[in-house]
Image 1 (cartoon, helix red, strand yellow):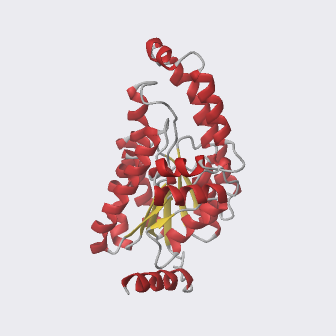
Image 2: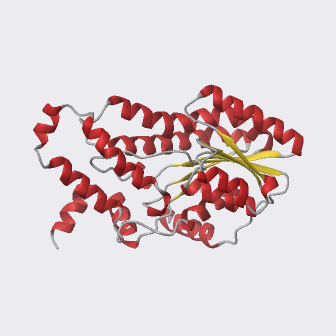
Image 3: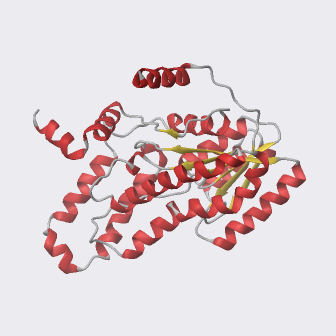
Amino acid sequence: IFLALYIIAKLFHYFKPKQFISSYGKAVLITGCDSGFGNLLAYSLNERGFRVYATCLDPDGDGGQGLTKNSRFTDQMVVLKMNVTDDDNVRQVYKQVTDDLNENKCQLWSVVNNAGYMITSPVEWGLLADYEHLFDVNVFGVVRVTRVFLPLLRVSKGRIVNMSSTMGRLILDNYSAYCMTKASVLVFSNALRLEMQRFGIRVATIMPGAFKTTGLFAATIASMDNICLNTDQSVKSAYGQQYYQQWKQQTTNELVSKILVGTDSSIVVNDMIDAVMNTVPRNNYEPIGSLAFQVFYRLNNILGKNLLIKLFSLF
């Protein structure tokens, strides 16, 4: 009976008509708008009438300049420089946003913690600093920005949208650092959701599959050479002379695979928009652009990776 009621409730929630909030008098802050999902989301929310604070690591780069010049409502697009690893910089942006909100009689409705990057590396390779910097951007950047901007969200009873990944649940070898950061974002979001209920603030997590159009993978592959250079020769010798080239080639093949990697970034952006605008957003969104990856990911969650590998080995 409980299972039947659970399924009915899920189906009702899935099929019931969606209702969306009005963008009038509302603003959204998005981190990591230089490229990828953050950049696309900034354009999309601007088109829907939000005042958008698009924060970029380099606002003078192509991504930031494009937002400034090419948005539908350029007067509603505010591009700001923000490094999510810098406490002083984040607080400076908070002051800029607060002043701008007061001047334009707006409320900050949502913070979208999108900034992040990926590295791939065996645990022994590279520097410990590689792990530390990845956590500083992908995890502590999320925590830092959230803590600073929460006072504004308590006023609006708005939204926090955090970018995690399917790799927060799908643990892969040579991606330990990245998987750890995205699992941390998921756990942080789940705890924050419970704490924010008293203030009427909703917390949603976006967990995309792999999408080649973000530019994330090109930077990941490019960083592999530097990781190899920073690995002790005795460690590389233990793995064998051919290991690095084989690992790099395999990684490149995986990240450009037409079977496993999606090409339509709008799948992710539409879920991000829903998390910001839906009156009853979901806790977790899992936009996956590849059917093959979708099947692999779902079976992995049910069977676990070891059983899944054994299952595939039978064919």
